[in-house]
Amino acid sequence: EAGVAQSPRYKIIEKRQSVAFWCNPISGHATLYWYQQILGQGPKLLIQFQNNGVVDDSQLPKDRFSAERLKGVDSTLKIQPAKLEDSAVYLCASSSGGLAGGAVGELFFGEGSRLTVL
Amino acid sequence: RKEVEQDPGPFNVPEGATVAFNCTYSNSASQSFFWYRQDCRKEPKLLMSVYSSGNEDGRFTAQLNRASQYISLLIRDSKLSDSATYLCVVNFGSGQFYFGTGTSLTVIP
Image 1 (tube, rainbow over the protein chains, first blue to last red):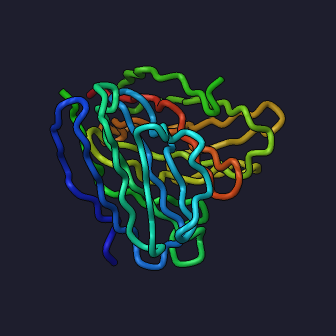
Image 2: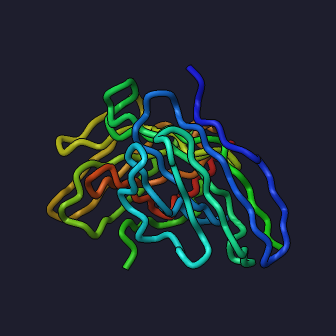
């Protein structure tokens, strides 16, 4: 079974530029998450989708971050304009809620997209 | 106030030692609890779920105290391969998973 796919793996940009990250979850997983993980910290939830609807985006800095999951499958996270403090790994995860394999509550993560803002 | 709090460590222990990690959470309505493991520069992976009655998986034991809003992970007979960051994770409902800062463990030969 294919895992969660993310791209690009690495991205270096200058502040005020824009960047987009893509995620394709495990087939059949209705729930998709974007997390931000700054070095030395735990993952911070940015946004949670259930199919193509947003469940929680309370911690998404909406003045510069946006995310969409138009067809309820893959998702894009965009940052515009980027700031130095956005340097982090952006992790995408998906979950079936235990309905399609995996333990209830098991999140399957992609390898992440490492962003460096100069 | 952070939703999920952990002692970041680092914990440096010799092989064969027993080590315990603790975690507290702020939302008393939290529904489910987990420990994830994250190796250096890798993604987090589920280590084990945490049940009210306590549960064990080999050398790992997890416990939950809902009254104190407290979760623990005990690792017995530590191996070099246990070196990693251990993340406490709480589901606040509706599949909203919040992670602690993580506790760094290094097992020394």
